[in-house]
Amino acid sequence: MRETAQSVWNNCLNFIEDNIQPQAYKTWFEPIIAVKLTDNALSIQVPSKFFYEWLEEHYVKILKVALTKELGENAKLVYVIKMENTYGNKLPYTEKIPSSNRTPVKSQEVDIPLQNKNPELRNPFVIPGIRNVKIESQLNPNYSFENFLEGDSNRLARNAGIAVANKPGGTSFNPLLIFGGVGLGKTHLAHAIGVDIKDKYPEKTVLYISAEKFTQQYIDSVKKNNRNDFIHFYQIIDVLIIDDVQFLSGKSGTQDVFFHIFNHLHQNGKQVILTSDKAPVDMQDIEQRLLSRFKWGLSAELQSPDFETRVSILKNKLYRDGVEMPEEIIDYVAKNIKTNVRELEGAIISLIAQASFNKKEITLSLAKDIVEKFVKNTKREVSVDYIQKVVSDYFQMDVETLQSKTRKRHIVQARQLAMFFAKKLTKASLASIGTQIGKRDHATVLHACKTVDNLASTDKQFKKYVEDLAKKLSV
Image (cartoon, rainbow, N blue to C red; front, side):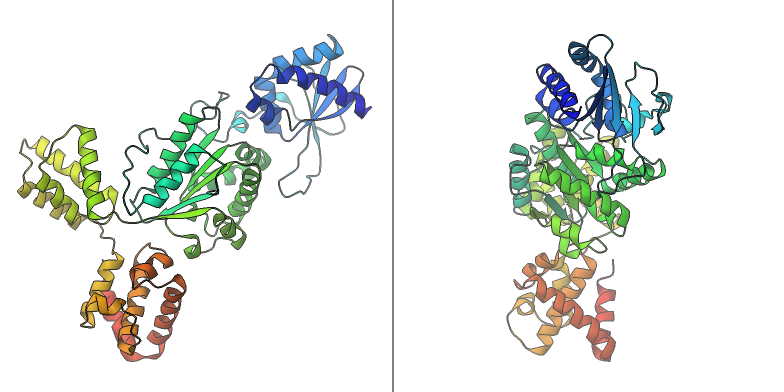
């Protein structure tokens, strides 16, 4: 009986494959299994209720034509929904649903009345356009590679992003994890990759989502008892971009479900792009099995832009806004706002606005006033360089001595304190801190932090060093 069902379904598939897009056929018809043929009723097994509803909404006509060709005008199609989660544990029942143009089949198994269909199951996003076949990407087209200027601080991440956009899922950069401090362009770069992929491969399903929203959707799916539909939705994405993945920290249920979604995507050659405010080695309360997968591809750090890059960013911003500004003012803003790109652009926007609203000429004097107020009103993010300078001044040595290879006790302690405060007060990775403080590795930084903790609790003089420096570095 099963062989007959299979042969009927194979003939249907041949017809369907000739009449729809290859990607749609692969996504929506290859996973279907022919179960049995009883009289003129063909039973087919689909992975979830979400899958069934998508077929009924978008492919019911072609299914009817294909089945009528094989079984005649009285042909019937019965869906068997295999409720099986990603962990391999079958749920206690199998659901059967008839095709939407038939009367519900009476069964000893659980029937799902068609009027209970939840439209949100087709797409867990409550956004305009969920009724369309096309899943909205949630990408911001204003974030592109063109306005993400290259510099020493971002060259690796940007070039890796371009490589991924040219060949999503086909490079060794999978997953691509972009990490760095606030306002350095992680979100911009993630969107730029997605926008470029959509431009080059319009048939691919690209989705951008914050880890916070992903978590909320997962919680909602558990409440509504449609977790399988949530999982299946994410498993059909070709390019999944998750922003601020560190938000999954401590959320074991969401980490668990993301682990299985990630595995499915990776094994099927789909591209995963993640952003984080810290490197995998510095992430707290993220399961080791997930962290190990984050390290499979490439982790690329975005650092604070150097002076030349800051000038280029300002000039690009002014060019796009159609504003001219004297070179000395651009240089002044770039020299005095070093923390991140967001603050840099914010300062120049404030400067343009002040000049426009008050009908003043953009002068160096006005720029000084704006920058002073802007820096004062913006929480300053301490840099590794600044920490080294403060620590060096405190111990009355120069930064070169602090970074040197000498093993003299007081210099080693100063260096360890600089590493300790760099880890505590910046978003820089351990590897980045080590590189900046005398070209050490991340293990040296980790050892320094442990040493400072131990000495601060056992040595009164050393404890005073820590307290004094904490006051000097307070922001």
